[in-house]
Image (cartoon, rainbow, N blue to C red; front, side, top):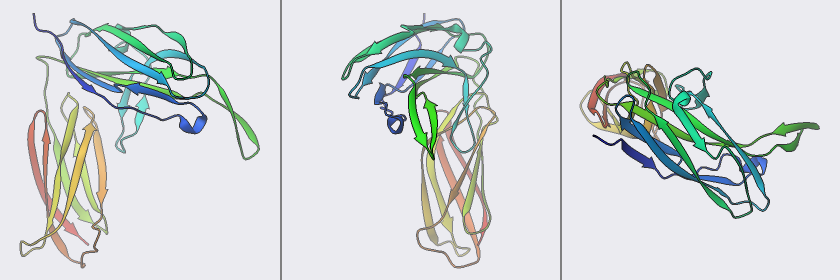
Length: 247
């Protein structure tokens, strides 16, 4: 029997320092490829880098990535989150302490890429802003993606160009799998001379979603019309497109 294929993104994330929490998580992203109904398990390590004890609870949340790259939580209703179990779901970390947390689950029926956010919540803090006392609960999340083998329909569409000072790039994913793309955008004069180049670092494009990007040359280009070429790579292949940009 095939085993789940797992990609670990060994990232350390510090989203809660401003609220006085010093929690780090590694890995912060896990991507699996598994057959529908196949069981899997993984671990992640949560560490308390702060000077005080931290009470932590765990919750599960479906999510998606918006056009601007931000994460949007979705209502909990079946899907991947319903098939997951986290051990433990509540614990206390002393200063400098760490704990290995286990996530067990089963790939649900469906197709393409499914996702769930394993959210670790710290204790409530009181913060004052403009004379107002606020209660804040810092959180850090493990993003888990499962792509169901044999159901993949990868696709990607890129539109470049437009009018204005900034070069617009729209990446659309009409397929059913997460596309994690990187590449480059090159700008040419109508005579064929390359006048600008931009790099695209790895970024996710959600199934059925899009990413909107803007680029502006470090050295301003003269007003006029330019030819733009974009070349992208992902685990599912290479994609290319071109367009016109009028400044």
